[in-house]
Length: 309
Image (cartoon, rainbow, N blue to C red):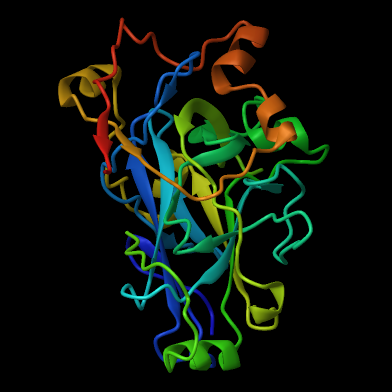
C-alpha cells in the first residue's frame, strides 16, 4: 500500500501485518533557535506544515519559509503500547542520524535509523551526545544545506522517509501479550527547491535502537520523498497561496514562546562526526560575505521551561 498524505501528515500503513499497524509523521513549523554557542531546549510547535500531492508528477510538496525551522513528530495507530517501527530520515541524500549517504534500507551495523515510539520526535541533525542541529530551510545552490556540504553530487533537497514494521509473527505474539515489551510511550535541484541546513543547537538525544534486527520485516518497508519548496514554487505548482506567513524576528519577540527541555534517561548516541563538522547556515554566510539570517535585533530567547520530573 502506498504512503498517503493528509493535509498535515504522512501515514504509513501495513495492513499485511495488522489492521492497526500504522505510523503517522507530522512536520511541525517552529522558531529557529539562535545559531550561536548556546544549546537551547526543544522549541514548541507553531502548527503543522501544509502537505499537498504534487500536480506535476508523483510526490508530496511542503512549502517552507526561510524564517522557520522544522521538526518531525511520530505517532502510532496504537498509542497505548510500545509496538515499535523502524524509521529512517534523510535530508536530501544525507542520513540525518549518521551523516552517511541516504539509502532507504537500514544499515544495522551503522545504526542509521531509530525506533518509534522510543524516539517520539526529531528536531535536527545528530551532531553530538544529546545535541542536534536544527532543521532549517535554505535554498539549494548556495552551499548552505548539509547535503551540499557532504555529498559530491547535485543536491536533491527535500526529506526522505523510510518506515519498517515488525514481522507479522512478532506483532501477533506481542499483541497476545506473550512478551513483555517494556515501557509505554504516548507519542505525540529545480529553482525554488529547498534543502535542510544545520541551524542552532538543541538539546535532544537520539535513542540507540534496542529491537533485535531479526524482528523487522525488511520486505514490508515503505519509503517516500517530501519535496520542500519555497512559497513561490508552491503556488506555481498547486495554484494555491501559501497557508502561512513567514515568521519575523519581531514576531519571535512578540510571541515570547517558551522552550521545552525534555528529560531523557535513554542511552543516547554520541552523534555523527561528519554532521558535527558541517558549517551552520550562519557560518556559510560568513565565509561568502553574505548574511542569510536577519539581524536578531538583540533577540533574547525566553527562559526554558523544564518539562519532566
